[in-house]
Length: 78
Image 1 (tube, rainbow, N blue to C red):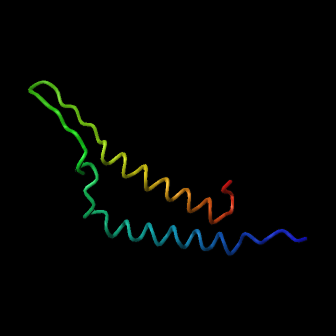
Image 2 (cartoon, rainbow, N blue to C red):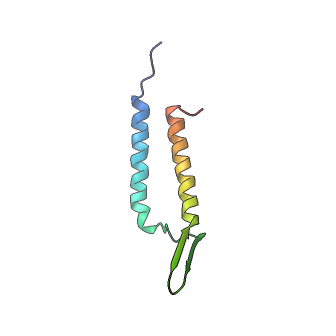
Image 3 (cartoon, rainbow, N blue to C red):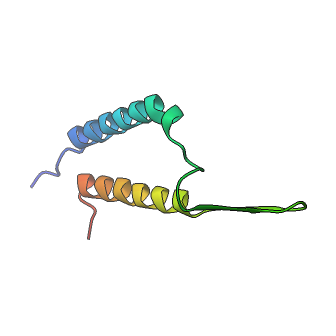
């Protein structure tokens, strides 16, 4: 039996990635990463501590969804 041709899936993945990058490029100035609810900032006269918990959680969820979609698209999900 012949092996499946990965060409169409690769083109779909590249096209989807370009679409997402284009949308992010247009929306990036409006996205307030680093100032989301859940980002904690503490400071005094001599120190400043910044904990981007909300931003980290959002990026983690987004990257998980992206990797799951790529895995599903290429059929490597177990």
